[in-house]
Each structure stands twice: as C-alpha cells, then as structure tokens.
Amino acid sequence: MATAPKLALHTLAPECTVSTEAIESSERGDSLARKRFQRGHVFLIGGTWFGKYREDVIEAEGITRRKQVTVTLGSKKDIPTKPLAKRRMELILARINSTDYRPGRFAKMDEFATIWKEHVLLGSKPSSIRSAKSHLNVHILPHFGKRSLDEIGVQAQQFFVTKLAQANLSRKMILNVLSTLASILQTAKGWGYVCQMVDYKSLTIPTEEVQTGARFFTVEEVGKIIAAAREPYRTMIWLLATTGMRAGEMLGLQWSDIDFEKGLLNIRRSAWYGRVQTTKNKNSEAIIPLPGILAATLRTFREQWKSNPDGFLFVTRNRRPPSSNKVVEYGLWPVLDLLAIPRCGLHAFRHTHTSLLLDTGATPKVVQEQLRHADPRVTLGVYAHVLGDAHREAVEKVASVVFQSVPKAREETKYIQ
Image 1 (tube, rainbow, N blue to C red):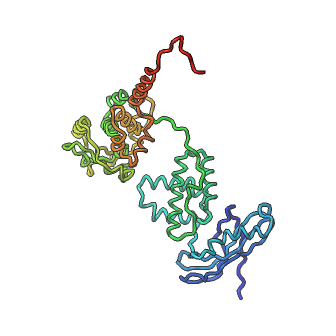
Image 2 (image 1 turned 120 degrees about the vertical axis):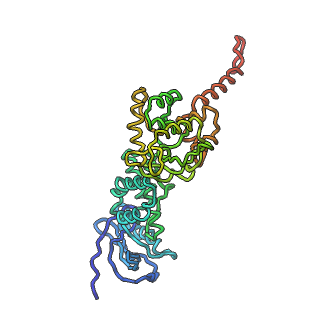
Image 3 (image 1 turned 135 degrees about the vertical axis):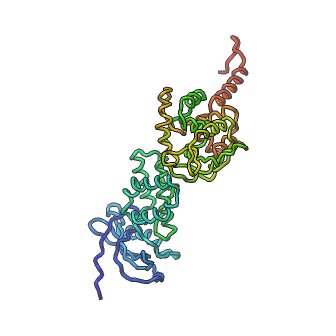
C-alpha cells in the first residue's frame, strides 16, 4: 500500500474556517462521495490544538475528490482540555455532517477575483468597473488575496472593516468596498464555491461622520458665473443650473434628446471620461421640462456648434464628450477665481437648482421628480441643507405667531413657583 504524503498543518484565522490545502486521498469522478458522519481527529502540538477531517471538493475540471483537511482550533490556553477541543471541532463539522451537505468548490480570493472580473464585472458600467478594480487592488486583494474564500467569514469581514476604518476611510467608502466584496462572495456562492456572503447586520460599521454642508450658489452668484463663463462652458452651466441634471447626464446630451417644439428634455445616457454609459439608475432616465429661456440659449449655442457623428452637444477634439473634471478645471474654476467665489465642483449647480426650486414654492414631490430620485426621503435627506430662504421665512413666521400670542408682562403678574 502506498504511503500517503505527510500532512502540512496550516494556521487559520481564529474563526476556525477551513484550509483547502490538504492531502488528496481518493478520486470519485462526477458522483457524490458516500455520506458518512464524521467526528474528526483532535490532537495537540506545541501548545496548539489541531483537528483533521475529510472534505469532498469539486475541482476545476469538475471531478469530485476527497481531501484530508487540517484546521487550527486554538491554543491550549484558550482551550484547556481535549473535550473542549472536540466541541470546537463539532462546530466545524456541522456543515459536513448536515443532511443537505454537497461537495463544494474551493478557490483563493485572488484566483476567483480574476474570474469575477472577466465574467461578471465586465458587464458593468465603465465607472463601476473602475471603482471595483480600485477596491480590489487597493483594499481587498492586499488583505484577502491569498486566503481561501471559505476563510472569509463574519469575523474576517469584521477585521477587514476595522482595518479600513483605521486607515481613515469614510463610512461611505467602507460600504462601497464592502459592496464589491459582497458581489464577489455572492457570485462565488451562486457558483457553488464554499464561502460565506457579507452579512451587513453582523458587522459593526463606523457611524456617519459629521457632514459638512454641501456647496451651492446664490442666485446672484449663478448669474455672475454664467455672464463670466465662455462657451461651451456657459451653455453647460445654463443646463446644470436650470435643470438640476448631473454633470455626466449633461455631457451625454445629444440634440436628438431635445424637443424644442414640446419643450422637453429627454435624459437617456451619461458620459464618463469620454465614454457613454447608462444613467445612474433606471429612475434617472426621464423626460423633464425644457424651460423657454434655456431653449433659447440652446438655439443660440447650436448656431456656433461644430457637428459630430453622434450629435453630442459638447465634444473634445476626438469628437467624444469631455470629462467632468476637465470642465471643472478649465471652465469653472477660472471663473470662480475671477469672481472670488470658493472653488467647488459641478454638483454644486444641482444643489443650487434644488434650493431655488424649494425657494420658489415647489413641493417635495415636484423636487423629487425633477431630481429623479426613486424615494422622496432621499431628496429630503440629501438636500435638507439647501432648503433656502423659504424654510427660514416659514420658521420665522411661526416664531412670530408664538411671540404675538404671549401676553405682555405686567408688574402685578404673579409667576407660578
């Protein structure tokens, strides 16, 4: 009988997840391995408890093989007796001994991430692809790259969140990185790999930071900015300030999207770094009113417009939409510096439009439809800081009514003790 090769011991995370590097003991072809209840083998080496058991694994070629796996249960200090070590082993074997157990696939994070990028991420928007790749290269792969997917349980996920927080990442960025990790693990789970999906309810994520007020302009500032800007930036600012559309949606506009006769503006796409993509979400695709003043501005702009094959309103020398950061750098900041207005981005015009809508008496429902938010709570939650003078005037009126209802104090007035 051939002697099995010596088993290498692998130290795992404290949560006692499974290491897939083990001894191959048998080949079963495509059929399931014979179901057998396991108690495993527990032993002590150098003050550390280890456990052995057998796992059925589906390999890349689709063949099911039985492998012997070794896990680290903990130190003798944490687990003083063998019976306690066996109890820890029972927790690990619960999945193996379950009646609905089936052989699973195993892979390391860096291996599966490559597959995920080629077959899942590739179908996303260019902006989403760039963000996900950044999350992978900067955060996920440096931390989890050489670990098996089945090792990334709740505890490992929490350690990862803590590491991100200690790196001073914002709550929003941490959630974005977790979203990429969740997509990878969810895909792996659906494809039959042994892993645990991200459980947000079980994770302690840093609380929201104190938010600084988002930038927006006064109506006087908007007027000065439009007057000082040169084309095509002047028309860009007109569009942003009078419609509240996002910068990418503005840069993705084509003349076919504009119905001058009916006074409508159809938002169908977005442009990101010169590449055309879908809008932020389905609710962002909508038809909004085209103000008469804006229509006149667009007609004037069209007289000097240089044609391009796709009919984009704004293009660079390569006949593709410009990137928003270039518009800010070359079109907006020089004007703000000239007018001694603090620098900001194009999104400030979306906040400005919201503020002006509310100041002129628009209802939250109208604002929601114009900004194309699926949930009105998003509108009020995100833009509550730009309620403007109308909000202040309403509160002042209430305070005035309360003040007028208070009787004037008299000398003989007796106060309640």
